[in-house]
Image 1 (cartoon, rainbow, N blue to C red):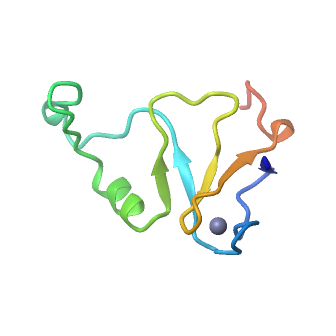
Image 2 (image 1 turned 90 degrees about the horizontal axis):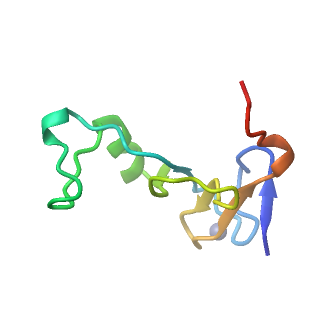
Length: 94
Ligand SMILES: [Zn+2]
């Protein structure tokens, strides 16, 4: 089942959990440039605010690249992936 929504759904369509995380793509924000060691030791230093959001389950890191079929949200309870409906996801949105 490919769940699609125009905006973040208030609850999971499968388990009805309200713990829906936003999947964030792209390179995370690093605290300082000189602490950026990703690749050599796989050690990354996240922005404290972002790290807090990850720990609280608001945000999930989805990797560096977002594809057309990449999910936009994920249920923290049952791990169901939720997708943004295409019509609300124009490539060149302002
Ligand atoms: Zn769920």
